[in-house]
Image 1 (tube, rainbow, N blue to C red):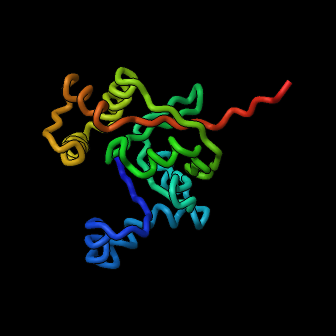
Image 2: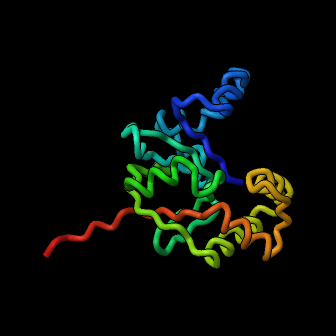
Length: 179
């Protein structure tokens, strides 16, 4: 279930909705970001990460909370779903300028990223659903709302979903030394 909390100063319908949100709800939605600010990100475990990225137009730094849907311990990759599609501000920003930082648990690192191909992304999403069987109906409901059509979790629907909502993998930047 992807979680995108995007901070921006543009006035949109989402901004108007946010201002009508009760203060306690706003606090709870911002809590994961505050936990990282307070060096208590470890309380979230490895379920969420905070992506710090630079605006492609404004040059400002933004922070976006994303749910980790898959991880590969062998190469340190963490996979997230772009819940609002490839036109999400954070996706466009990291494609224009490399992400500044990933914070997960108590670790922070400068990442490199890649968009997973359809087969790989579908496998990550299938594994996520398998690992989260108890909340699968909620996950499918949220993904259906994000996609704009009924997502049933079948292989065909999963492939269609990952074409519409890309899966992005982050891993620590590999520093290569010059000869």
